Length: 143
Image 1 (cartoon, rainbow, N blue to C red):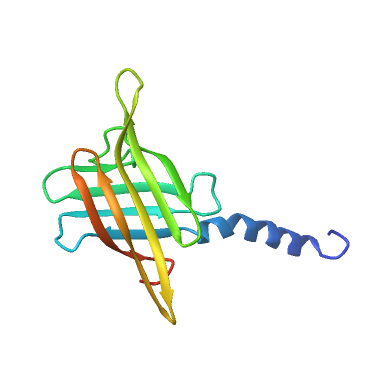
Image 2: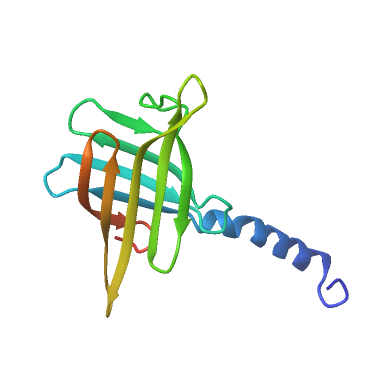
């Protein structure tokens, strides 16, 4: 590679490789039609754990966040996440004082395309709270 390209070109390729995963982040915001629940998650498909963070708020005071600096954070973390062929999802959990894991919420979101249109939506479940069908907006799709 060194014989074909100069040092500057090789450095540019390394820099591009470092920047590319950052550019692949997608912020998806979802809510139900009645306004009872809203949540946002961020994915990075090039990473080992594709769901990087989740924030959720119900209409009452209950909310959660996997961001340690957020006021709704009580130790929740993304325990599972996946990105497949136009479907993605994740599970947010927390651990009790004995180290046992408990599910706080999970979601499954699908993406459907027709011509130049896209629809993003799915289902979210909150432990002890219920199930909701949600519509979503994706920064990756410009929605």
